[in-house]
Image 1 (cartoon, each protein chain N blue to C red):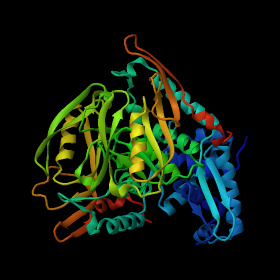
Image 2: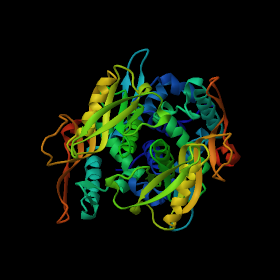
Image 3: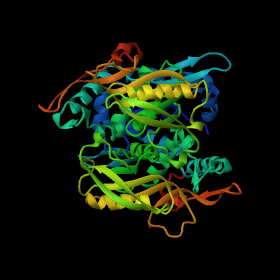
Image 4: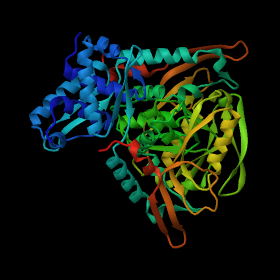
Amino acid sequence: MKVRRSGRLVDMTHYLLQHPHKLVPLTFFSERFLSAKSSISEDLTIIKEQFEHQGIGTIVTVPGAAGGVKFISKMGKQEAESVEAELKEMLAVPERILPGGYLYMTDILGNPQYVNQIGRLFASVFSDNAIDVVMTIATKGIPLAYAIATHLNVPVVVVRNDNRVTEGSTVSINYVSGSSKRIRTMTLARRSLSPGTNVLIIDDFMKAGGTINGMINLLDEFQATLAGIGVFVESEGTEERLVEKYISMLKLSHVNEREKQIQIVSGNYMEEKNKFLKT
Amino acid sequence: MKVRRSGRLVDMTHYLLQHPHKLVPLTFFSERFLSAKSSISEDLTIIKEQFEHQGIGTIVTVPGAAGGVKFISKMGKQEAESVEAELKEMLAVPERILPGGYLYMTDILGNPQYVNQIGRLFASVFSDNAIDVVMTIATKGIPLAYAIATHLNVPVVVVRNDNRVTEGSTVSINYVSGSSKRIRTMTLARRSLSPGTNVLIIDDFMKAGGTINGMINLLDEFQATLAGIGVFVESEGTEERLVEKYISMLKLSHVNEREKQIQIVSGNYMEEKNKFLKT
């Protein structure tokens, strides 16, 4: 059955949103709707314009016989700043201070709407990196890792601090948890990563960076490649940072447990502001 | 700036997909696009028709001054069956058998596309239940819980088997892990659940049901209400089931570790087939 433009726009919008970073040949849509490729091209122009105008993302055209279109999930600069401001305000509440300089963030990371916004923000920042897999460590980083992976359309692997039977054979390494200086173990199922895989490491919180440094060492064990590091909140004021290059959304710049004071500032993600849409 | 129908259809489709189960007043859209409510109504009719035709969901109209429209994320019956068939085939591979009658599912649950499909399937099944929160237990259930919660537009709370500092004050209970008959502890942050909350419990795998039964007992501690139980794969052949009423997508009906045999059949979710779209 032939589908009219209005119907096509609704369905193509849905399809592209569900399949970011996937090359879709124009013939896929023209066969789906029994419409000429020229009509499909016009539809895509309308969708691209609207996506860029509303800060949803962009549509890239790959020319040639093996070509097609690719939806890249992006956020507008203004929206990124307003999401940042909202989260900053929510986090800068003295009641959130936990023993050891940690922050209570469970409610925010438990809300799929916030998690999805943070995910879109990081997916914008890393939209040009070649990424095959998102890696995180259980438990808190998992929702963020999936949100980012959804917008980059790649799988997630979860490193664990225990060694549960359901994982099959595993690779374990010891690492020094930077803040507590304790030696801990992290484990990843052997079938999780192939050699040469480009891995984006994601975590919710970083103090000295011992955990992320451990994940980088784990990549070596699998002969995988580091493609980027993203953390939701980094904590300032740790003597030495074990990790060099990373993108953070927020920075916990001052915590005084005794006087119940807390200060949250911007992370360094806006150094990548050309990765965001200009809306 | 006034937006034309084609632009409105793209943006409204995106907006509704991002805000399932949320009542949106027509004035929201008419102000957003500087368009008459009658035009917005026509747009919504086109979107609803297309959503139902393509098995994306439905749009419910709530009449009256405090009314509006609500997008309910649903799956078509045919798509549900084809997703089920695909997962069945992927899982019924002898190499997936792990010691203790478990199944290696990490690759499937690590793929956001599959996780999202399973999420939409369960969101359809539970679309009419009053649900305030989705609860799961770390680690494997987390991606599924978020996928379902995203489509139901509610937060997630994660029960843990350890007691990490970043959670603040917690409530713990002991439970008997049904299959291993061991006594374990599960913990939930005190600020996670308010009394009277309607909770949907989600897990990736259920043998005797000891873990889910533990979560039900934990709900009592918080004076919360059980609103439903969903498991991705249940394992048959356990002597006694500790949990009575639940929805499963797949059933592991036969595992022979020695002879490397495995059989996966349908779970009971199709008993709720009226919850799916007829496409």
